[in-house]
Length: 446
Ligand code: ADP
Ligand code: MG
Ligand code: MG
Ligand code: MG
Ligand code: MG
Image (cartoon, rainbow, N blue to C red; front, side, top):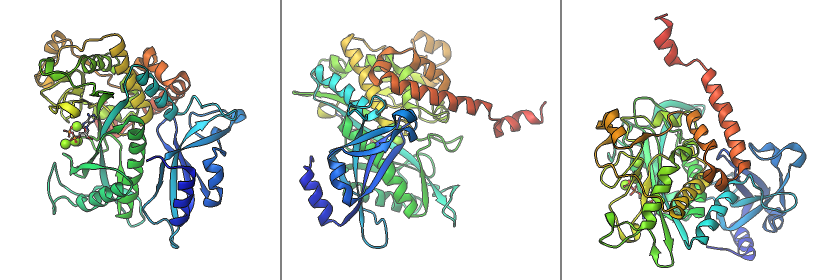
């Protein structure tokens, strides 16, 4: 997939590309871009494109604001949708952010993920494979193109048309993704009305993180073209399932899937897999702040809606935080079910990888697996089984993150400080807001 500068220039000329969009992700997970006309392509390819870092959330102060974008040439693609009336196309490149003195910028989440990948390579792993399962809701747009709270259908899990009117939009999303190099394995209606899931084949972690960002852009773009608004907000409607982004993961080495054990191993899992799991469970509270970074994330992590609430794992049921899917061999994997699509995929995957690698280094054994439905256990039974709760607010999760040096070291203090500062402000603003629920419950009673 790697392209040389010359190959990129040739494609740009052949395909009548008029603009080059160089994108990166800020600390909070938002995609940013600098768009230049194709006349500037040489500058872009030679790492000479500058931008003002002080205008980006969590980046740098005004007095150190000039930064460079170093595009990753393997991420070149031409957007398959029309952008204007005269046939000109837009291409994109995903970039790493460099300081004015041409050193890698410590506040770039993509660079943090690359650092975690190096750590895994030092332990002999060649790939950290990630298969994400992002979910989203489709709402109708009104005549002025503004999103409404009206869902696009009343369908449910695996329902077929005509109930599932999201099907046409979803099909177009899938076709667009395929044009952009995604291998879509499945796309289906989810449990809630208006809710959908698209699963694409696993990739090595950096590619997977880039794909998650591209995926969100594609879903939002195609939805809008069809008169819908796509949201990745975890819990847009109370009382029905929220949207998660399960993360399927496995470490590979030169011999193949390092999570796959021998037939007589416990659950057919290798020690590598069990220790990785031990690390993920140990660091779960801190991971939650990164995997579930909004106030709204915690409204999804509540009992009764298929989302995890407890720090536990199982090979036999779907309720816990980590599930071991039944497939073995190449598909042996762990599925982390807490993550939601508001996460920054770069820092999230860096944090998960570092948690798992810590488990491998420290030979951490996972707690006993829980094969009962945890939601049917009472608090005492859970206590006896050693099952702890996940943090239940953003504030609790942030406090856990601030105490976890493995995760802090993995992502770097620059990003963690900017992230926790912004998120504490977000939490305080939420805490000060008087909601409809409070008025409904207190106004007439006091
Ligand atoms: P679920 O049963 O939870 O709905 P899906 O079938 O929707 O799971 O998604 C499974 C995901 O796991 C896919 O993205 C798939 O490519 C991915 N996957 C398969 N094998 C591996 C592996 N070895 N490592 C990581 N991900 C994998
Ligand atoms: Mg799925
Ligand atoms: Mg499935
Ligand atoms: Mg799902
Ligand atoms: Mg799943």
